[in-house]
Length: 440
Image (cartoon, rainbow, N blue to C red; front, side):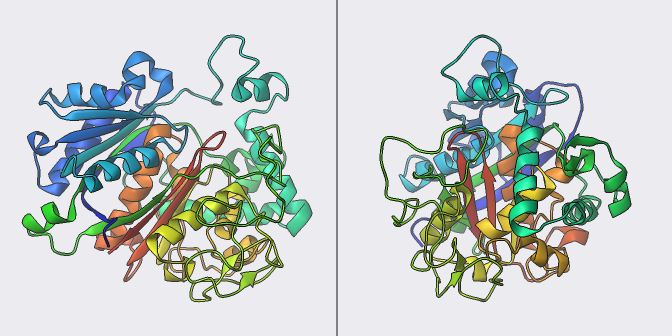
């Protein structure tokens, strides 16, 4: 397909708390990705850096920062910031340059040296900044609104704290097999239940940590890959970075407003990125609407909606829908997925938002074992943020690294047999979100 680019190299610096500069982590990941691609730094025509805003000027100009760290050689540079979606936005920028004919080889790098404890907004008085306001007005740290998501699931769908613990147990089992993960230890449901309450009902082991780490990809044109003798590379087929569409009928903290002056009709539905969720008429392969409690697993040919054809599910589902439509695929085509498990409860939301099951059926899918490594649609085979923690500019890139290794068949003990298609999904603050479809 004309929109495809090849993934020739993938590399990571292991996640942890190393006490060094983010530049060191990014440089190490970049060198590993270049070695994996069989290319040298001098072969790179463009470098796209995902920004880290906590690291001062070098973080704000991450493209040039990493180019300098690798050695000035004349490559064009781009720096991208999109909160937790920064890495996928960087991938999208690199892909656009390749498809526009501006470069044949682009290096994408993201790295972070995250603070200990909660993320917080930058200092100063900024009453027009919704991130500042949610701390000042609501006192809503990240774990606080993770807990509100969890409480809503318990109230609306009947999810339990035991369901949330099962997510951690599943992801920890996968992370124990991943040499790049920060936490490489299996846990039991009892250990999750015994961990400290952070924001009721979520406990310490329900919530991801903040981490240091880096990830990098070498993307090329398909012609370049073939010229290098790579006839069947892993390929990026779609990158979705759509924004929300109003009205948003479910309040999605840390946003603290539910509507805007655009005055969109509540029953409006549209094409890629136009609606707030899936409906029966939208998305590749959509054959039937999956209402609340329905089972819409891979192979069903159906995408989830809010029931009865409405298109008001969530911003997250619109991100996935746009990716499926661009790729010409649907959730029934997936071999695996990497989703953004800031908390255990949020992972269950993603099952529904990327179309693995109907609204409210995420916990049921988990209980069946469908999303475990040996299940029919494994989710977070890397171990997810539960095992890595957040290194914000790197994590969406790391998701694509994991899909690359899985689709190559080189993921070792966590390998999904016969993996051919995967999707990543994450959401940053205030309208930043992404999904990447990777195929082989």
